[in-house]
Length: 207
Image (cartoon, rainbow, N blue to C red; front, side):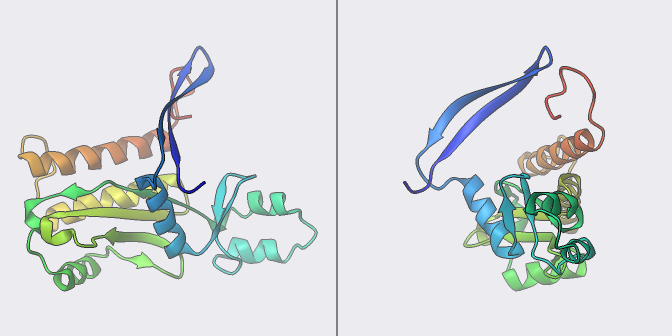
């Protein structure tokens, strides 16, 4: 069949979650690209039954503990193996004139000095998609964590650190570049807060 993707709109109304299919994409989508990027960096596997992406045994202490209990079923092992779960978030391209003409060597050196790195042992942290783009002033941010809240917070932190390093004002009213940083960063923080403190109401569409 090849690559395809389906876009949905989900809304919780009167206590029920309603889902509408709104688009069919018969090509590799940015969502598929982000998952393959995540899969390449992490080297784990997606468990369709639990809905979790799990790391190989030995990556975390929880995985080692589960490995020592061979009587557990695959499903119960996956669900109890919380410490080996990974979640990720990847932005669309973020633009800034401050990146134009920036050398990759200089950019990655700055990132290391600022603590913006990807830990290949823990499979957490931040990486960047900058293929043929950073000289044009755009890049994509990938962040992974043990939970979705961790991933969202890491991506938001990365945007804030880059903004400070390259003199980008993340508040409103700072021009087109600043608005791009502001909107993405504030959206990530909003979603992370919602996931951390879900509202037990019918209108809470993030639960």
